Length: 168
Length: 68
Image 1: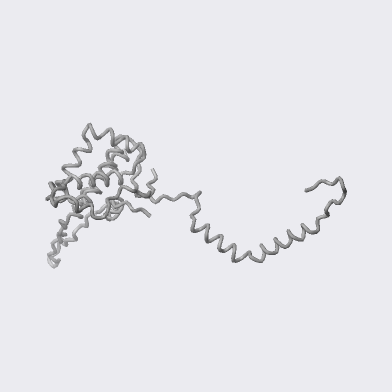
Image 2 (image 1 turned 135 degrees about the vertical axis):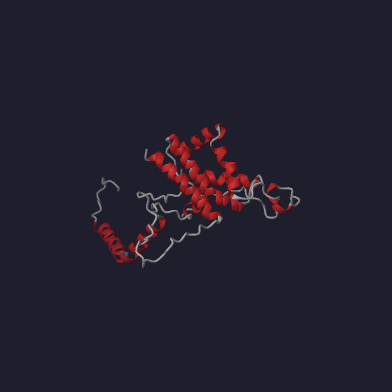
């Protein structure tokens, strides 16, 4: 599934982070799991639990990249105060690999989200602009000549002069 | 360009798929041969290295599934 950057208006307004008392948010308190291993001990049993397993496979079948899934998981963990962002970033590769393992085990085709998306049929805008620029550089004379020829042809065309002639 | 931090974290682990073959220590049996003990490589215990080990072990298991 293509992950396109879209403008979001859900971002916090500047200063919103300071509207709550310090320490009132989960992520402002000491994390529950301070090492990667502790965080993974939290995540991995949940990935294979009955409640999460089916929805994971559904998401994989829908084409959601595993990297996106892992990233959102660890972000939730940070928001809940389970671990720090650093520990979350370290846990991400293991979570991705575990998700891939689950997908392979279930025989589901999934996308990791690390593949470079190259659409051979689609020509990039920069290439089109470059080609247009080169065309303009090479063909101004030719374009002018063709315009002149058109004018001449129009002039040379014999106009019907009869009373019953059709107007073109 | 991929801007997903998870993708970057996953690809920047630097895991090689090559199978490491342990080098055999050449120990001569002659009287004049050197008494060379094979060097034991110190394994780093940095979190990134531990994560790399975890990922490579899961990947091995995954390959066993995909290869039958």
